[in-house]
Image 1 (cartoon, rainbow, N blue to C red):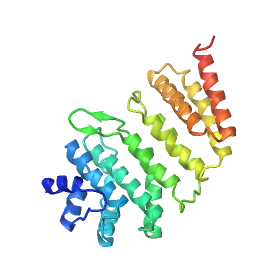
Image 2 (image 1 turned 135 degrees about the vertical axis):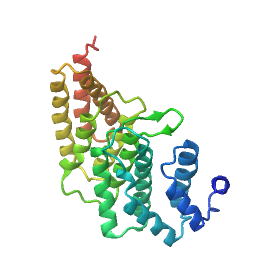
Image 3 (image 1 turned 180 degrees about the vertical axis):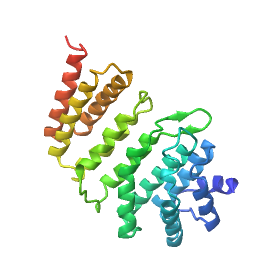
Length: 273
């Protein structure tokens, strides 16, 4: 089967056709510990299959049903750090692909769509394994992949947030669970998801500014407790602010608020002349 998939990857755009057996192999190997199979074959073919409309309608439904029924997104999420993280994080990427495809042309029922919206917000609140690149096993990258899933929700035309504070709790939860510094550009992916939320008017600019104001104060208050993790949080928060500053280049009221926080950080850290 691997050889068959290698041949599929090499096909030019518009030539992809999948057998049902190949679809099942992809589903069974979302979290394969071999990074070549997981990244270069399984994820790549899922991405191309959706973007090139290469899946038959029944195959799409099999993928959706498997995603929902198997709940790989939450597999062993409360257990100590283990290899199930690869299944969770690549399930998050698959969730993003499904929502992005559904945003272009409906493939989900209303209840399925709402469930994926809810899961995309819930996942990063529960995930605690923040490893990026794992030696011999490749990318776990839970925060980045989860942010992509969240971004697919926040950019979906059918997403109507009932409680914006629940979305901001994603950032709060990530920082509460942060024990080591991010080293694989996770902040950039988090920032872009929330930029999508504001850009597509799922989050009001005023609500975003209010969150930035409140969370910025909270970050500095945590420094009163002499804990190294709190300094990691400050560093990651600063990177979030920097990314947002450039993303919001055409939204003056947001960018000005971000600049004030960045300037205050530099002053507090002594990076002024």
